Amino acid sequence: SQDPPLQPQLLFASVSVPGPALLFAKVKRKEEQVRRFYACAACRDRKDCNFFQWEDEKVSETRLQAREEINRSRQPPFTHTEYVERYQSFVALPLAKRKFCADCQLLLLPEEWGPHSAHCLLSDVSLAQLKRPSRLLLPLENKKTNAQYLFADRTCQFLLDIIISLGFRRVLCVGTPRLHEFIQMRQSEKKEPVMRSQLLDIDFRYSQFYSQEEFCHYNMFNHYFFGGKFASEACQRFLCQPNGESVIMVTDPPFGGMVEALAHSFKKVVRLWKTSCDQELPMFWIFPYFFEPRILQCFPTFALLDYQVDYDNHALYKHGHSGRKQSPVRIFTNLPPKDVVLPAEEGYRFCSLCQRYISSENKHCESCQACTSKDGRAWKHCQICNKCVKPSWVHCDSCGRCALQEHPCGKVGHGCFTCGSTEHKRRECPVSENRTTMKKLKSGKRKISEMDKEPVATKFQRQTQAKRARKRKRSSGHLENQKENQRKRNNNNPERRLSSI
Ligand SMILES: C[S@@+](CC[C@H](N)C(=O)[O-])C[C@H]1O[C@@H](n2cnc3c(N)ncnc32)[C@H](O)[C@@H]1O
Ligand SMILES: [Zn+2]
Ligand SMILES: [Zn+2]
Ligand SMILES: [Zn+2]
Ligand SMILES: [Zn+2]
Ligand SMILES: [Zn+2]
Picture (cartoon, rainbow, N blue to C red):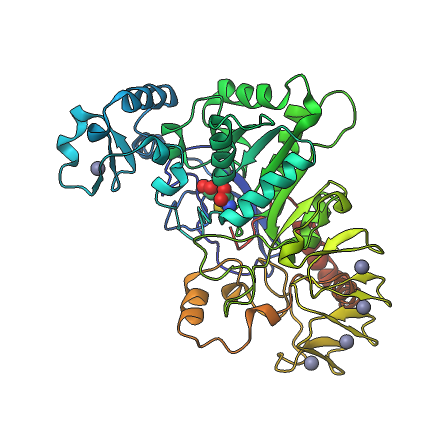
């Protein structure tokens, strides 16, 4: 990008544990050069972790030591084994002695009460509460890094029901603590059929509640198991049980995350599971619909489902029309869409032509030969663009495409780096959810409905952009050529640094 380098990072702050960095590339357009650097694989906000190192940089001994020191200070206070032992001691205590420190987010043993006496303590922690850690723990709402948005019960129940009805008996929960918790609770209630689950998440606070077979402290941006070989083997053991076909992976990564890095990790998870045959690990990847092109680039067999994923603690992304925005979060899957039955009581119905379940207002377009709505509203077909567009869009002759009435006419740039939209820049992106956007939304200054903003560059736009690029190349000769190629290479490089990260 042309932007000054955003400080990349190696360490985690909110859930602060050291781990390997990712290698990114920064392109200086003017100087025609690429410089690679290491940055944190977990934090997308430099306030959380400001690790930065050029690839070819020599790091002094003193700096290495200082870094070691920071790493040490950011380790979880206990090992997973210690957490498990503590849990056992904790549940053996009488109710009156079971205290949870809300400030430290820690289950306390009586001999530790002293140093926490001035902290906010929760007393009489019941077994029922211990079974729902996602309610006990404060969601890490740090927008860029953790973005811990928890499923509403409606969504959790739907996911579990559909998983069971599809015949799966084991669920690998990658960044889905609440789904894991649902399955664990079900198990303790001895419900049939028996379901099992394992959680992989960067939030190590969960080590307090789950065994090493139930939880692995994991970074999904670089497939890193903090518990080392023991943990990755636990994951492999979970995936590769005798009836290997009955396992599904469900992931709900932070939305600001880089799709390509995630896909790279998920392919490694598949390799942990994969037997000799060329099977695909069944997967639900929960992510905003406007990432469809980028997800399909990484996983061409995936389909986008119409189901609107709903969160408890997300002020904006809510299901339905209750004055709030509808959720743009959907399920991507490599299972046949016709098998994923969406709830009729929420208005979903089957389109026999598309062979999939669609939302109530989505309608089948004869010209496109598909149910074209992505956002849940009825889309309309534009004869000139030869595709369906959002209801609020009109065809603009100067731009040669459909857009909002008040679009920046004639200024088709590269668009948003995070989601690909040409209607806004990264700073206003609804996905990266930075402060400015949140402030604007809160103060009601938002002129254009976020829903009306154009999502990822569509195939058509990409084609016209490519055409323009080719034209530019022809007209401005070699240097321009190089730039364009550089840009393309960059876009194809999975380790390229996106400004969203
Ligand atoms: C959008 S929330 C999804 C939670 C899910 N909706 C649920 O209710 O179970 C993202 C989850 O990913 C986890 N997470 C964030 N960054 C991560 C990373 N780098 N590696 C692994 N997990 C991460 C967060 O701790 C959080 O649990
Ligand atoms: Zn405390
Ligand atoms: Zn249809
Ligand atoms: Zn159409
Ligand atoms: Zn049009
Ligand atoms: Zn225009």
